[in-house]
Figure 1 (cartoon, chains in turn red, green):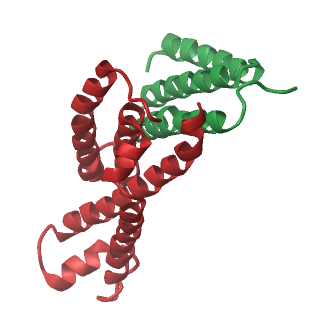
Figure 2 (figure 1 turned 120 degrees about the vertical axis):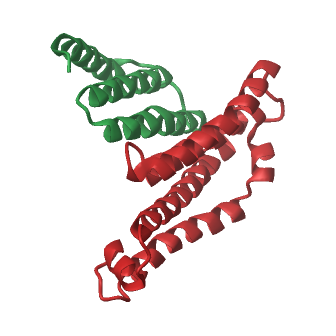
Length: 145
Length: 81
């Protein structure tokens, strides 16, 4: 995609992308209390990158968000998820049993923070994997269309 | 939960589902499938399943449409049969 889109699309994307990303972070963090969660928030975050690809073209977005960085993010997120899950095994709890780790350390409301951390891990992984899938799909197909 | 609204949405959803598999142009089918997904999300939220509605709206109407359009751009738009 050598030519960029019209100025209207680029301006709207430039204004909308930060709001979409803040909304995605809200969905991830608010997932424990209401609708949403790590998966939905990650998908919404990936949608902001899709909007950037549509508006500014794939090479421009790839310069800012490289595939290497996405791979690191996908591994990091699943490591946070599995690490907290396995951490709950240490005080003789089940996998992802936050109550055990809270009772062992004696910190009140720790399980809420752990749920949020697990959701953030899921969100990071979903965002990275969705964005890399879109990169691979848009790489050769977007050029010829 | 409004009975008449649910019925109308369901009818329109079935219409969209039939149209998506009978239309010849694959790009049209993708857009109709996206509309189907949006109606499905409205029905989910009508039935108080907000979490499922959110997932349907984000994945079904958003990501899947983009993936299908990317796949159409890589292959052909017209169906051969």
